[in-house]
Length: 298
Image 1: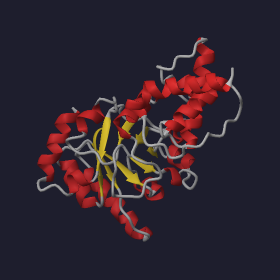
Image 2: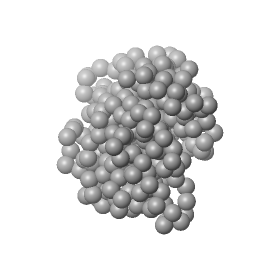
Image 3: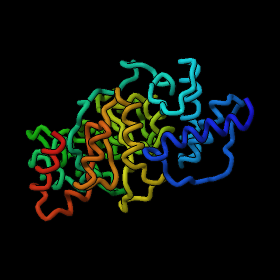
Image 4: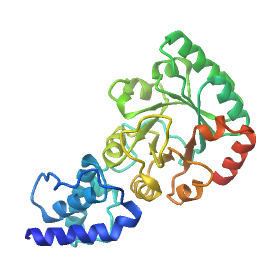
């Protein structure tokens, strides 16, 4: 197949998916291609034109090639969404972490044990302690205080980053970022029976997380957030829907810049949980705000 045909296929893909998945391209140059399969090349070019970063465009291109070979037909309108085309292994798996509910509901990310207890008592079903300190003793005390704070409330408590303290105190689960995966002892977390949540920011990171078989996968940032520097631009609700469809066998959490006005679009994606940070801790009436979000996610 000649270059003109490849470019025509790429243009057809872009035309079919620009409205839902397109973002400003980060690089307008012709992408590097690992081989000459025309569908792969067309999908790689289209993905880059739609603004996917190199690593994610590579995943999409390989999946498009696999889907075309599996079905025997190229369809520019059908964005790849079958796990097998992305090399995702079927469930259940021998290396899987302890499961958590497919729908975690409102997921409050909170700065200390006092806030954890306050939101747990307000009925928030899933809470995360994101306590920032280099003092290991202080971390252990805060983790233990957070566990005490949720006792009797029914809230599921995840500990951000501090997996050793979470194991020692017997927390419900641990949440790790991509940069923490290689540093944490995943076998120790799994062996202790703790649940594991992992942050992801696109196809490549989702596939990496999936191979670990975590309890849930967090996907973002959906919208712009000032809370931390993000490695990728906001993904938007359209991409969130595509990610959620691919990762439908996992418990999923949407995170990043989500407020009450954006919540309906986020929920259309099919995720079973929405994580919020400032929406609660900066609210004039946090308990009232929590009750509203809980009702919307019920």
